[in-house]
Image (tube, rainbow, N blue to C red; front, side):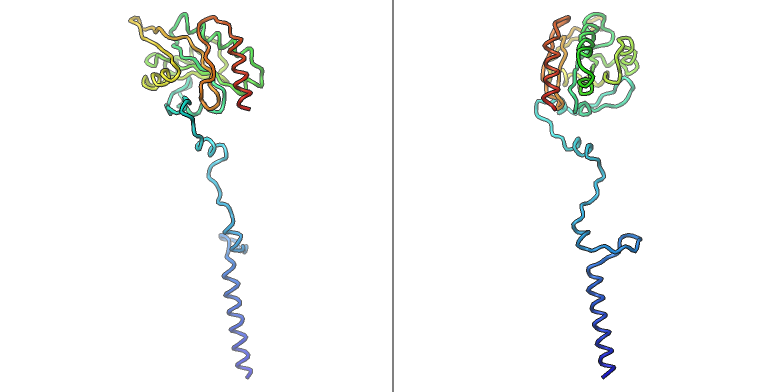
Length: 226
């Protein structure tokens, strides 16, 4: 009789231990016991930050310049994908560094725009110059040009790239240019304002033109994005 009770007790303990261990497991190399139900409901850890995930999942409209997914080099020789310009209002002009007349005037108009924006607004914009003369406008040449124009490189960048990418970008914004026999270029005189998604918001046309409407458009573009 005692033997029967002893065997029954052992069986009950064994079954209880099996049920208990079915609902528990050991975490890693530690002895901490975690309930299985908690682990099944736990969200997997992400390898990417929220900002990186948001950028990688960003979908551009058919009107966005970032659709062309082109690669450039800036005045420091660093690679820049066109999509990296997203997130800020972009004030963009196409120029060439050897230009002695129109391009310096375009850059001067952009500097005047810069002077008429508040410190808070300047945090939300970027000034970008794209070269139409990639054969001569190396990163070193563009940096030299930036210094000669007294550009603040914390909010200005100068880009050079492949001829095909330049042509694609020019076509998107209606910019026309032609190489002359002397190596210079005749070209449109445009300052382009893009919203944070790369959609054309406003174009300033001509040289030495009144810029007040362009400044108002930039402020409106910034406020629209808030």
